[in-house]
Length: 277
View 1 (cartoon, rainbow, N blue to C red):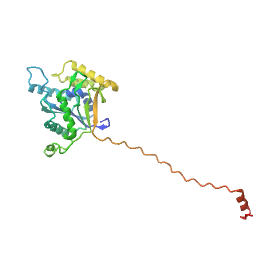
View 2: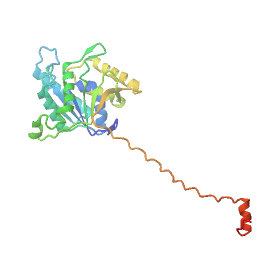
View 3: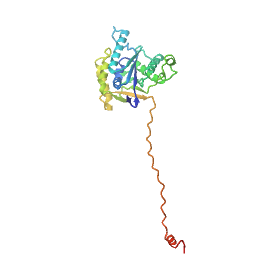
View 4: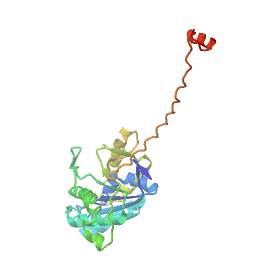
């Protein structure tokens, strides 16, 4: 499949919690999976902080959220879910986390890496971004340069695990403000909503309405009924378009010398046999 000039066979979504991908990029994931792209989810934390229920334990909630994420991924056509298991709410872009994400990128070798923009701190003056979102996005950026792409970065991945370096062709940063490149998800919006509903431990009845509204507002400027927006960073040099061959100019034939008209005196001499007299 080609998108924005990128040949995409494999994609990976690096995110912090179960349901992050469903809120942000699930429409694009469903669309690409339908087109034959192999999509892998790499969830960095265990989601174990997402409850105010005093009877809930972190271990129980972790298992519930893993199951919810697997169900949502199945709905979307995601090929594989990887759970790194870091503690929800305590994530930092440490060397250990960076190595674990780099390992998955080297294993799955995605053409496109999708994540949340770590520069986004506050959205629309009502939402403060979760620090785990920022940390997971930061780790994804560091995987591009240098963690997953450089042989001597985490050399144990190469020496001991025989994982060759890999650099994706492009990085897609989810842009919740609607700016950037908009993907038309009109035909898969219901799949996105269905996958979101799989996260029953987390969502109230307002979540579906909010996601539909986001999709509508994001798609509208591009003329779509529903959309998801991304800031796209092209990591490969685009191929220079071939210059059209110049039409060869026809060689101009040397002008043929026109005979000079003889003068009346010359004609007279010829008649007289060349005698000027």
